[in-house]
Image (cartoon, rainbow, N blue to C red):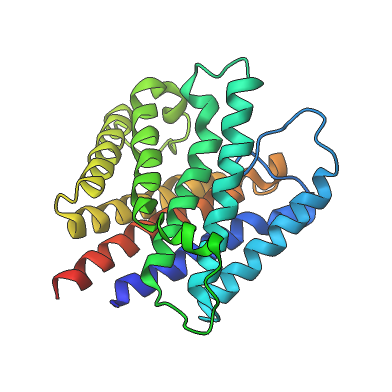
Length: 262
């Protein structure tokens, strides 16, 4: 295991933990994890339990206390929320389902799901953990982690071309030629996502994508969070940690590619 893999795993866990900490305060899922289903009972309770489970899983991964099993359970939970929460909501409830931007929350959750499977793939089997049917089934999905992640990365890249005005509004005023950087970043995300899925210069693609996402974090998400840290249930604060988790996933994949070559 490379230092890049370990650093990426740390970034993913800190990022995901940072995303769910506000749920302990606001008792809401937010668009990153579950849409606002009409009539869903006890949302505050479910959001609180979800945050506790995620934090416990991240701690187990970082401390390597049955870390692989914790990562698989985390991936399974996030995947179930995608299928039964987001997909069902978009197909059955959301009148704006034909607009890609309405799927942005699901794409965020899908990248985090992929990241959890990638984490599981970087950790060794624990002989002391009884392999239940669910864990054995989830283990088979580990190779799909990079696919789940890259669907989001390509989708985010496409939004740069589909909604350029929305992306432009995120840029600080001091950045020159914002339209150029909007399209450049979109193209870079799309190319990086496809390169990882098809294993084209995987190590280089993962490193460059991770760096690009860190640049987004430093020059876009952090300034926005400083300007409005707690608005919309800490939306900008959560996006900072989301970018950290996404970047960490890219570094993990690059690290695993490097380990495979050595």
